[in-house]
Image (cartoon, rainbow, N blue to C red; front, side, top):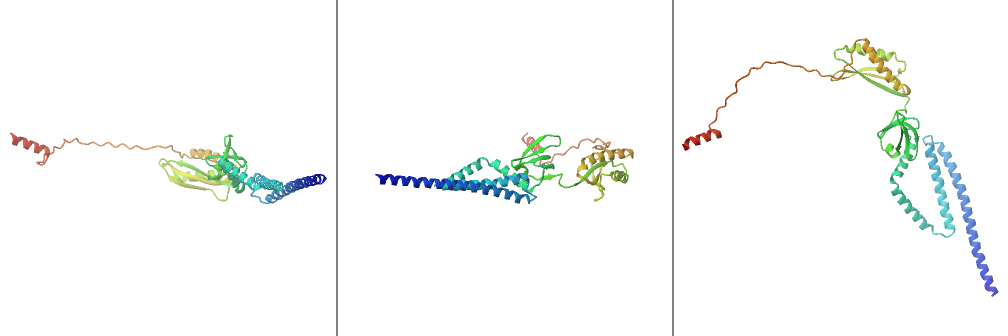
Length: 302
């Protein structure tokens, strides 16, 4: 009897000892895994800071992705420490991930597009862009969408997939822009004089850059006007103010020099012709015509 109790106690001690060792091992794995995940997180963040093309949002996303991936592996290792079949758990997680991926296909495409936008950086916060039928100043670039402020002060949130699949025009990337202004003059006006007047307007404007030099070109002989193109380069921040001022100054200078800017028109020329009225021509009946044949048959019958 005493031997049986002793054996039972020994078995219980062995079982408890095994569980204690498993618990200690699991706690040890959790602590070590947590420390390793934190160290890898900080080290990855430090490495990504050395890459200037990676945005802060993308850097945070990648570092957290690395950290949580390590923690998932640690949890799977802890479950294996207690004898749990991790193969089935991994299979269930894979199936669940596939189902979630199919259900959130549009959302995941926005995330993938957001990662590409943050890595390639076709635009940054504060730049004015035109892409996918929308335009505005970039306020924030996230993983799911991009926030824009339109020219008239309207807030707009655009999905990243729409921006990533469209041609993007960035008006703020380069420090200078070329300004093109087309002005039409009448065919009756002196073309050379008009070009000299417009060239003088460009030369008096200090916001126009000297390199490359400005140009005054005849670009089209239109239906109602001769179109002259004013072409010059200016700083990005002076573009719109210079455009409005050049339009006003050009109109005033052309008016002062007697040069007109015609509106669309059409010349109609009327011709008066006297025509003699002639009598209609009588056509002779052919002997082979049906009417002549019917008359002939009628005469024969009589």
